Length: 482
Image (tube, rainbow, N blue to C red):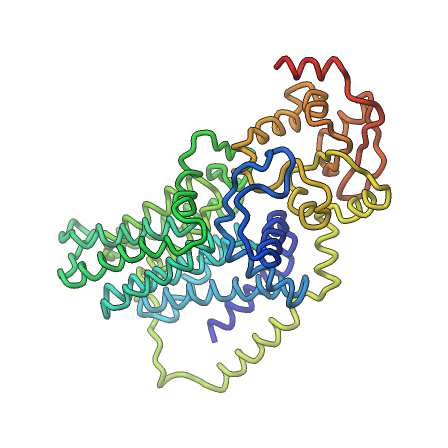
């Protein structure tokens, strides 16, 4: 019954989250793979990267996303999101229930995952990656506390994970933390470490080795395995323009909830003298570091801390006793929950409206009817939709920040969008013929004053400018010299 309530919460949470900017290029990549039966190794969607090498390391998730679209269009995509969100919350609830031994307090763990997961619930491959992270935590716990053969579920898990999302690297590190902590045996105040028996440790070591071997079951090879590490450690990767990759700042409720959960965990340990396991402290430290480094990692923080919090408060609420259960009221709750989830599911018109409210749908129609041609400069957040809806016009930039950073486009575009350089320099360098900008872009004011540019279309979402005069020879000469 509690799991059904979490499923309803999942649907109510994501029903208005259909039009994620990155969803579209994931969808287009899935279509390319589906149709061609090959995985691209260079950028196919932009003209500014000059076909720079690019690894679609989430190819399997992208194919599944496109498969949902083929089955049901926009409704199929929304069903994909609802099912993945519900599965993630329910799997998290099961993890917390098994870990804490209390299926009632485990609900708080599920709600913790929901709260921090709201930072990233979207039609993106990360949904599959984080679901697999929950499954990994469950396998590690069962392998440690019950039958050590549960550890052998890790290799097939990683064989799938490597092809779905780059978070597999966090999964490997997490398994390493568990194995590392298994060598300690001490008690210092409320901090307790219990070493594993040698057979269990050997089984875990073998499973971890096999998991590393399983990573090579991918269509690209070692490059796909190293991709997340290279991306995170590359000093050239400037994620500052992308808000979700910025360090944690206390600008919304989730940031304060982050402090609240940490404070609650340590207060429970200090005040109630509840034991905190050495492994839990290490996992907690990893979660805090990730969330503090990148705000989007609050999602991972929620998954890692939920079972710990559930265990610490497990004695605060009586455990579940099947003899005291009430099947009929539970059945009524399940029925009502199913009905609410069904009624809350948005219809096609609602989904279409969401797209029109956030993406340049009408601007694309205008571009086609007016037969605009030549290089296009687009708003960053519009890039994904333009890749999907107007593939005949290669984009200037989109949500794939890695490939554009490597090609030097992020820095150029950032300076242009913030008017930190002569606007004509970038426009003339790439021979831009027309621009598709957000209604909120400050560059709209600049282009209206810029000689040789004319606004030809505007709506509540986007504005289109066309070049009305040829590029300045002076600017072209300056760029050639540079």
